[in-house]
Amino acid sequence: MELARIATLLQPYANPAPEQLESISKYIDLVLKWNERINLTAIRDPEEIVTRHFGESFFAAAQWIVRGQSEHVIDIGSGAGFPGLPLAMYATSAAVTLIESQGKKATFLNEVIFALRLRNAKIFYGRAEQFGAQGDLVTLRAVEKFESVLPVAAAIVRTGGRLGLMIGAAQVPRVLSSLDTFQWGKPTQAPGGHARVLLTGTKIGNVEQN
Image 1: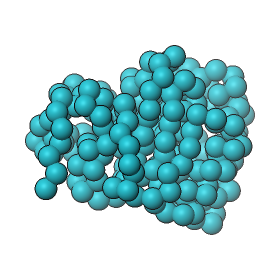
Image 2: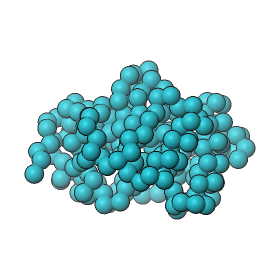
Image 3: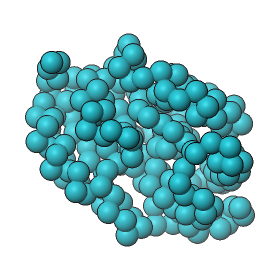
């Protein structure tokens, strides 16, 4: 896709630098190529990939990350790499770990990291329950079995760290009622007219394990 067209599509969400636009173009090519073999994303139209995946991810990055800060970002159930890899593209000072339990998707993510030379991103091939560390920012977007993954994600957030969710507006009450050890901000509507919001919580205590 032409870089000018990518920039136009991203205008409601973000204003990426020219080198980021080139990376996005390469990334789209890889998504389309791999999507013929494995189900990375149900979105097949390149322009919709730009808006729904890259646009929303860069919009979230601007809400969640201060450029120049050195912090550990963990993206759970990364799939095709959103929002984790755009977060790494946006904030090169952050160390980004993408947790992905499916081998073919993990292989795809490694190929993207190599192609885009994202030295601040790495893959943890396994389940989030097996990840032996905590992060400053833990992100979760459109994962299967959301309600069962949510407490696992909460446990990976360090005390004082943040949990960043990209979810449907209808899911917000469930999150607020189930994670009372987080102080939650108001949901932020993502551009684009879809019912997806950003919900950010700061961990104020340890999450009890059953």
